[in-house]
Image (cartoon, rainbow, N blue to C red; front, side, top):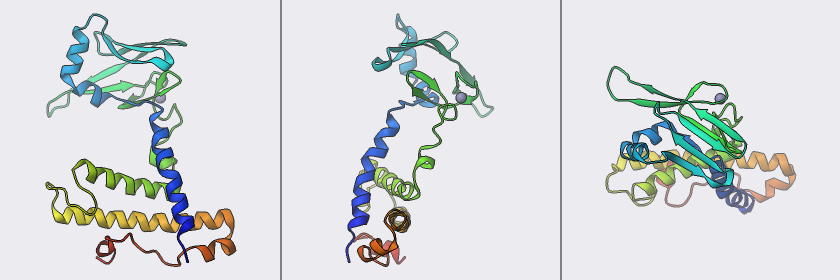
Length: 216
Ligand SMILES: [Zn+2]
């Protein structure tokens, strides 16, 4: 009994999928405008350039009304920006999709033209993935979160409570189990049960070190 089909697929998918998302160079209105110092810097600058993307000859210029005027290889368009002031204070900035005019926090660059995920036909990232990949993505997210906090599944980050870490470990093992089950059914779909059955473990086995999260 070996794990080879399982590990082969696991290794093949991680970096490719996570990178391909970035090619749409998303912009986030909250992130962009909440950095007040940077926005002021752009406002006070001569050319008011907000950002540029050389591969599309794209230059986005901040206007007085906060909207972005974009010139790129195929023409000119505007990304309208709306400022919301809720009762509880603060200011919130939203883009409007240049195609459908709906209010959106995030826009994606398709060949130099920014638009919302619906117009770009993207769907949310996790919705685009196959079932096995979706669970793998869940695992990756937990690992990345703990890494940012200065730890891992094995090493508790100093600011994280031990029950929180245990919760992450349990979530991780659950994703891993679902990933395992989904991968096996996908393998069976591709290669047929006869060829797959002798190659895989019959029951799921959690990663070593996370046994206590499995039998919690
Ligand atoms: Zn749209």
